[in-house]
Image (cartoon, rainbow, N blue to C red; front, side, top):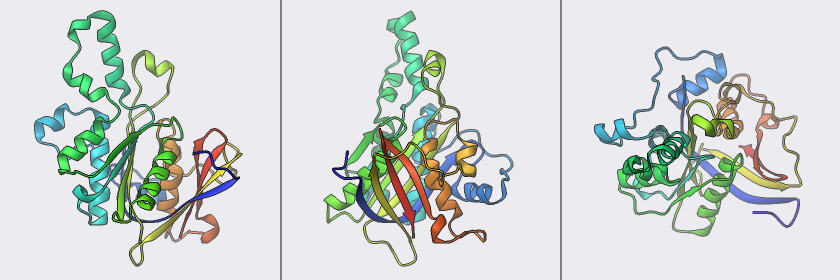
Length: 281
């Protein structure tokens, strides 16, 4: 993904649907209200409950799968798109660290007790697999990780998917991470549960938001114009927090205090000395 010049434009896409879930903010509507007022909803659920899964599967599914399916379903519903028709990109910084920690502990202490269910939930594409089976999708599904650049690289992959296939006019992008536990938490910090999803389209519908993305190389790690917004501040401890520069921007667009086009820019880390510059129209 390293561009040959200082700037390279992956493209422009429309945003048709948004899904969001974080501890205390169980929907995109709740997130927007929090961004505007700072108020958390009362009696927010402690865990997502994706209706896509049967009740017994819903109880057994790890938190990463639950939140990924919850936000993916919400984004598709908001976009009024049939989820089965969309190619999907699932991106996570670490995958499910709780499952990985439990398996490592079992291997160290009692190898024969390793759970087959935990093993199949430990792979990085577990959420993508649950999703495609649950919605009955035969479309391509991608699972990727790029540390703190995971969401930016997922967004680049989504834009590239639309550019590469003229027959596909929309794609689903999902980012998520959960809490680190055990010895792994001393190596990789991640707190709470956070997920976000976007349905992106090649040809934006009338009135839809347009997202312009430019990959910049030789870029600083951060930019003074990209001060942490309310969502990024609220979930700063989660590994997927870098994506919240975009979600804060989306929440801000259209607010009475909106400052106009000059404030409609955010930056996401996209790799060593690279960042993704995002503008909302």
